[in-house]
Amino acid sequence: MKAKILMGLPLAGKSSWLNVEDNVRDYKIVSADAYKESHKDYNPNKAFLLHEWSVKKAEKVMNLLSDEKIQLIMDGGGINNSYTTRIIKMLQEKGYYVELIHIKTPIEVCLKRNSIRERKVPVEAIIEKSAKENAQFQILSNLVNKISVIEFFTHEHIFIDMDGVLAALTTLPKINGKIDFVNSQLFKYLPPVQMVIDKLNALDPAKHKLYILSAIPNSFSYIEKMKWLDKHYNIPKDRRHFVNSGRHKAEMLENLRQFYKLKKHQVTLIDDTHATLENVKHLMMKPMHISEFLIYNF
Image 1 (spheres, rainbow, N blue to C red):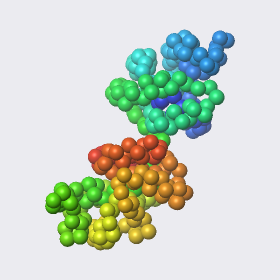
Image 2 (image 1 turned 90 degrees about the horizontal axis):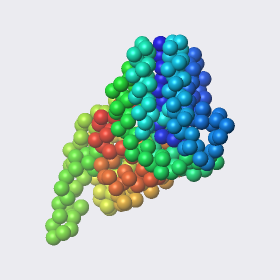
Image 3 (image 1 turned 60 degrees about the horizontal axis):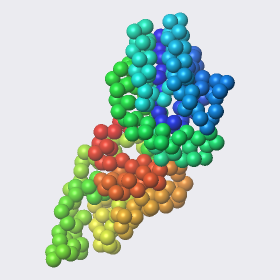
Image 4 (image 1 turned 90 degrees about the vertical axis):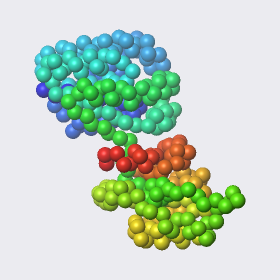
């Protein structure tokens, strides 16, 4: 018999996943939230008062139904609790094949959804669960038979930095505290990072469209970077984009998103500068450090 355990932040999209018929066909859904909302004393503004009662009921029902060998889906959140661990172990002791389904949605998105929702979840509860989400995922992952991660971001449109990502970063040639971009030909001879280029080339072009988004200090650098791309990573010229300051890269990414008429969840930026990635995160697009890209399973 099979069982699925859902985990994710409040407003991550677990209910939306449960509303897809193919996901739940032939399964009985057990939800602590549903029990809570059906209670005669339920108050949407004080739902926390019924939390302990609802999770105890959900655990009891999971025990009873698993005795009958019914295929089960438990929507319990799975963050910041111990009963999920107990239920997984109980199911496996009864011979169930347990799949963990992690609805992985950024906290910024969950908080925005919460702000426009009539029945709001306490913000501090979302923040607390977010801090523990990754740790709980690792704990539960070690218990289950299968793991499925459903990400908010689809990585359909990937924008790639050059310096420190496609090209090996070098020490800036400063003389008397100034950089001579013209005579140093700083960007023209940077060696390519072949491991990164190979992984980009291996991505399925039907699923991922690639773009360049790089900073340039002046027109000389623009010419050098265009020649570098012609030689080492010959992406179509209409998908090469440059911004005159790394500080403004996140804003440029948002402008390009609007220009190409993309949804935020479709857009990913691969970069090596943490400040830029943090700005992209605040704009609710996907920031991906180059080290994450190299180990990411697309």
